[in-house]
Length: 195
Image 1: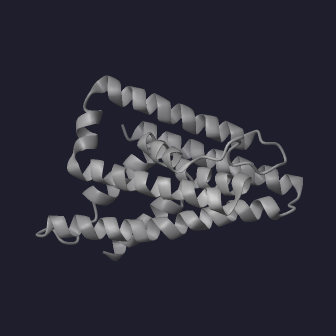
Image 2: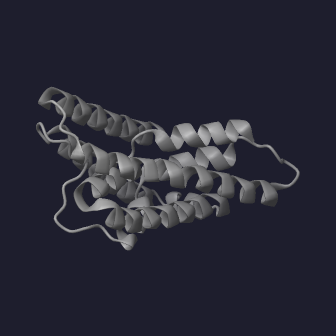
């Protein structure tokens, strides 16, 4: 179970559309809007987890054109986000938006987020700790995953809010932008190679 919890931490903490967008919402719109969006991401992630566990995701992804459409949409969105971050100049911008994302936007993002599917698949098909009690194992994994997921995403929300308030040197801001963009492109690469 400890291996599962550690895997959760490392899979969640790495930049992907969810954490980067929640940091961006925090940076652009503050804690209240960021919290609403974050709870949408959380519910969306639980829905992805249930889709993976139930086999629904596998059934949908077995249809070649559906899988390809979702892959193109998610990769395009992630590349778009990475470009926005990389070319933000000397200002730290995780995302740029004029309207505050809503609860439903968080759910929608998770539906096309390849990192959510990859992470849930890895976590729920691996790290067996109760092989004779599969239903209990899945329930415990959902609880552990969620209890780790929520504080890490709130930490990214607070980081987005904090970075906006900091007066960092332009060079440092550009370095942060490039690191975030490269991290997102790494996630895109993982999504493409895990097909």
